[in-house]
Image (cartoon, rainbow, N blue to C red; front, side, top):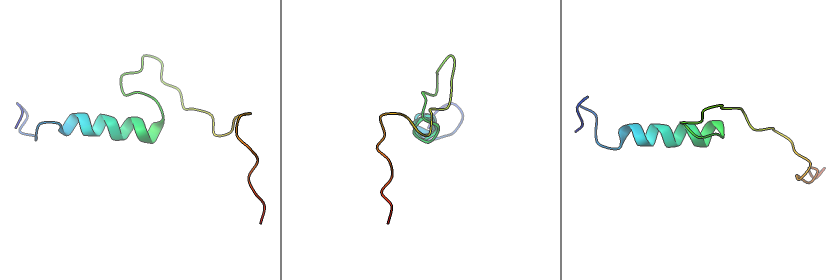
Amino acid sequence: MDDDGKPIGFDNLGHALESATLGYPYDATDPSIPPMKTEAQPPAAVR
């Protein structure tokens, strides 16, 4: 347990999940949401 009574690694896991979900590092100085569509992405297949 850490000083706050949480298991060790609890905050690290939260930061990792936040980064994976939002698409930028937890400690980014100027966070911005990555674009949803870029020129490098191929067009979606139509069914």
